[in-house]
Amino acid sequence: MQLPTHFVAGALIDKVVSRMRLPGWARVLTTGGLAYLFHGVLDKLAKVTYHPPEPLDDPFWKGYHQRVLPVFTWATVLAFAPRHFFAMLCAALPDLDWVVRGISRRTGRTITGWEKPVLNEGLHDLLNHVPVVKELNHLPDWRYERKAVLVEAGLVVMMLSLLLWLMRRKD
Image (cartoon, rainbow, N blue to C red; front, top):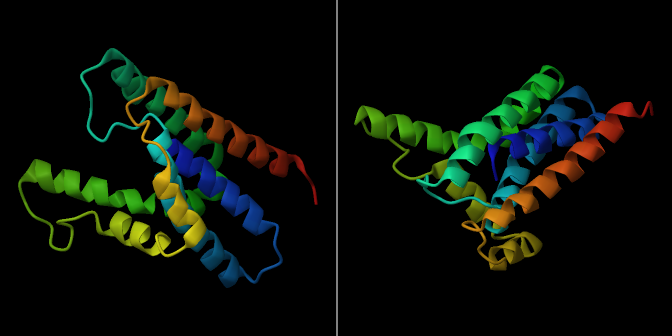
């Protein structure tokens, strides 16, 4: 999944957990833990979204990844980060692997412990022990299918709709 999808999921999780009657420390741990774990679930669903593992020299890929996603990412940050920053950070944390590994590749320096995507692989290994989540490994591979953009867009619309509905409720 793309970064703004993880951000929206984090904000939604934060909103749901904030409605529970938990002590402050339990709310922080629950929010952070669920946001982190849900990143892995979303990543498993990424197999049925437009998500080529490497950049493509293709006008559609460039338009989507260099125009649409950056605008949506900033809009998501501006709209939700002031209130849900911690949850959004936790929801994106497993992707720190790709940032660290990218810096390592560009600088030509190996960063000890990050030869592999440790946060992502560890999370996926953990989730592969959860039977229902493990079944997501059998989804079809649509990562190169342009129409699969609609799968992620639909998921984001559903999460955003629920988040906005919860934000309007006064319970």
